[in-house]
Length: 388
Image 1 (cartoon, rainbow, N blue to C red):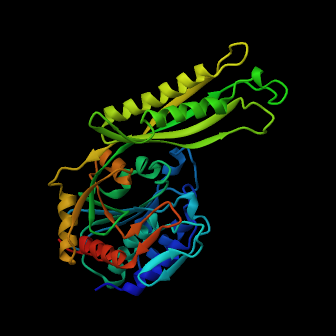
Image 2 (image 1 turned 180 degrees about the horizontal axis):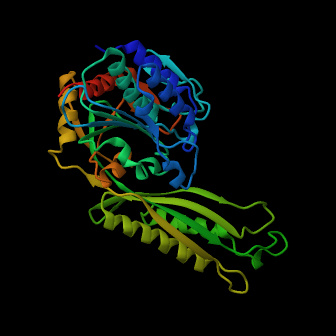
Image 3 (image 1 turned 180 degrees about the vertical axis):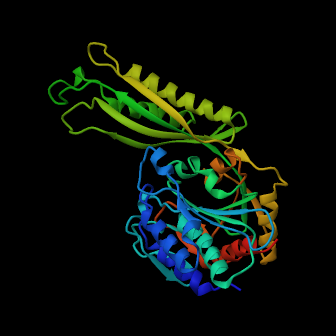
């Protein structure tokens, strides 16, 4: 049996809590308080120091609750991430029919991934309060997923107790079984020009904005920005952040850009990165002042997460699909074009399948949550955690 009102009220409370990447402490405190009130021993709950290894810092590490089994079986890991994107700042949930929507049309909802957070927490609370039989469990709520999967990347694996099965609850319908995901690379680009008075002697300057604009335009024109399809290979790229300039009467001497490249094919992803570099370097040589002085660029890139694809007969896939069928659903396998905590969990030796919780249109003001799908995700999680 599923205590639907309890699950939904838990969800609404979590959606109301602030918790941007690097600021998840209120969410972690809420989860810890709920677990303790339900009877989880204090020593079963801990936080690691993953945030101290992240470039974003923060005040909260990954939160883990480890419960010994009451029946024999392999240890199961259930996980979700606590942080939300900046567009969720100030969000509050509103229930309309079978949907949860943001009350303020200018914010996102935060169902990515507070719905997953709620599913994992509710499952733990039901087991603790009802004394349900269960195998050994590890319950994990990660930090800083939205800014590069830093929580999963630096998770203290020793706190998990060597799980044999692992299920991550994140985006999409509850019946979607994500067995793989793309790999992603982030680029930091500094474009250097030369300052000059924009009214008195603009010809003496080299505009960093002009360099960046020419490079981005070339990437778009040549098919290396946005969705990329070249020679049967696919990927994506995006210049997502541009910062620079202080006044209209100054030829801008520097702009900083943040960009990304993604592909399931590591070789092709490397090609995308090289094309971004080529476009930036070519544009920097093109823009010159009257003395022939050109601009320059500095580019650094790092791997955010590597692509993965679980074997078709992976034990976690089988368990997830059996649980979905057991509660009346029909599983559908998928591969994601976005990064997931499962990327790093799998890379670090814990093959992880991802299930949805009913979220749609994440990272936008149109974000919403299907409550029927959320309830189904709760039933799936409880089935996974209590039956073998």
